[in-house]
Amino acid sequence: SMGYATGFDEPVSTSQIRDILLHSCPYCEEFSSGIFICSDNSKQLQFAGLVTGLVRESKLWLKLFAILPRFRRNGIGARAASLILLYCREIWGITGAFLSIAEGNNAGLCFWTSQGFSATGTFRKALFNEEIKQNVLIMNKKCP
Image (cartoon, rainbow, N blue to C red):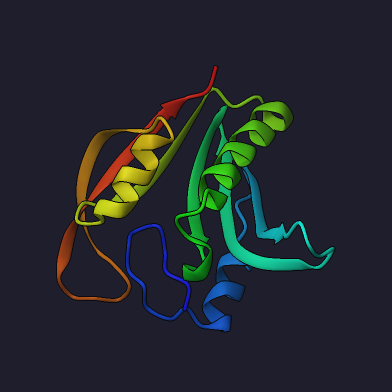
């Protein structure tokens, strides 16, 4: 299963991924990409995760950032996040990045804080078709 950056580790169906990738925004730059790794011993690429986002008015919004469980906690997420920010700065000239994350996702909060993001706001939202609303934090990072 591949969980979302909100910290839920529930399965994501192929149709849900397709819907995420096919969504378009006529007034912004959108992107989606697989995150792949190549081990030192092999030339074969392995799928390690997925990222989607959009750029609007020089700001990057990370919509989805997911690393498969077997690839977590070994630097792949940090490297991928760093490369995504660098790419978006070079291609679209972003000056900042934003994301949302469930307040109770301690591992995700630690990860994004270690990447230089800080909480700037909060709102309540029902996540993943659940009826109970949760606190969701908005985190941002300046990208000079």
